[in-house]
Amino acid sequence: MTDVSMLINGELCNGEDSFPVVNPATAEVFAHAPECSQKQLESAIEGAAGAFYTWKQGIELRRNALKSMAEKIQANSDEIALLLTQEQGKPLDKAKSEVMTASLQIQFAAAAQIPVEVLQDTDQALIKLIHKPYGVVAAITPWNFPISIAFGKVATALIAGNTVILKPSPYTPLSTLKIAEVIKDALPRGVLNIISGSDPLGAKLTEHPLIRKIDFTGSVGTGKRVAAAAAPDLKRFTLELGGNDPAIVLADANPKRIAKALFWGAFSNSGQVCIAVKRVYVHESIKESLTQELAKLAEEATVGNGLDAGVRLGPINNKAQFERVTSLVEDAKSAGARIVTGGQASGEGFCFQNTILTNVDDNARIVKEEQFGPVLPILGFEDINDVVSRANSTHFGLGSSIWTEDLQQAEELAEHIEAGTTWVNQHLALSPLAPFGGTKWSGIGYIGGKWGIEGATELQVINIKRS
Image (cartoon, rainbow, N blue to C red; front, side, top):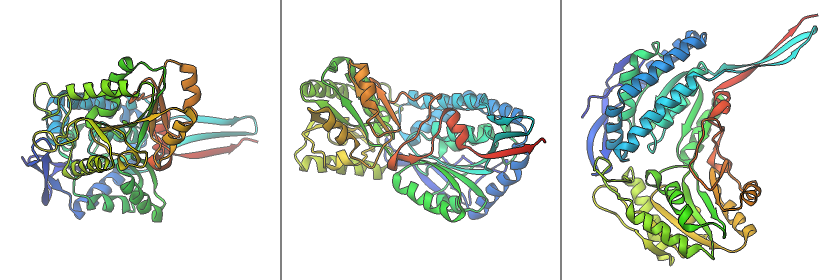
């Protein structure tokens, strides 16, 4: 399959070269995507810069265009979802859900208000604060949720009046490029450009002098390089990076009652979620009981090709990540960890068994690093103050959760967790009304709600002397 195109300055374009795309369920190349050339990159950025002045003028134009985008994505959701499953691996129903989520995000953004705050309104002066778009925004997106993350970024940037260059991960470019095809006529020429390419393309994009803001989701290492690339030109950036989310299960929690929510908080998308549960701290009095409940769920959740009926969880997305997860499990085993269930590859491609580990030391790599795969270490504790310290003992600070019957204690405890979000008796419960971001190495800036709009704009004070 090679019939996908980039959207550059209003036109669908082939690349001068291409690169392979692997189906993770088979580990075989099933398609090729266009490799954006330097000339095409310049055309995309110049087209976005040229469209900016008109695009930023009228918010009703922007609202209508976004609504049209959302409708076109919904109308083509089956075809987009099929490509998403083939290149990312997730079950087809989850792929369809992600595509529909992207459409809803665009609709939500289309209804957003761009705030104007009056700071002073007297006979002497009018002082107001307005939000203005940056200009051309580069959106660089990951392979775990390539559609919902991408179009959440795109929609927020566009409604604020920016124009956008979107570059998906080279592991998962096809579904994004398919959307480029279906929304081509929804937007004025040059407003949204969608390009694809191997890793060097991202560096060229972030360094370009016409890019005024970078919105990146991905690994900590790449995020640091993005920040470094932005520094010489003082480009603004939002970085949503990795997470090593702790779940703290207190002694009064009911293992049978919480196991399902906790399991899916860790294993959704085969653990390939930045804000998934990555390590569980359980009070010693219920540790064995909860471990067995989680192991049972892990064994019941079928892993396989996302196009096959009955599959609940797909493969790890790519070979490098598959090898990393395998390495982390082997490291834990060599250090004395007990594999309760799973622990090895499963079937074809990059499938890996849902894995529960116990007898894991806090210094094990599987605890200290982000596994980003279907492996969950379970650690015991007895003292609450001690477990909070252990939970916070990481460079990461994206999400966290507390599981207990005592909601007042949970609320008090939550304030001591170093994370952008702390849930109680749930995980992965993101709301479009709330900001989403992390502390420490988990990111800079926020998306979601009014904070997302603010992140897509810069402030200007208008100060008028009246007398």
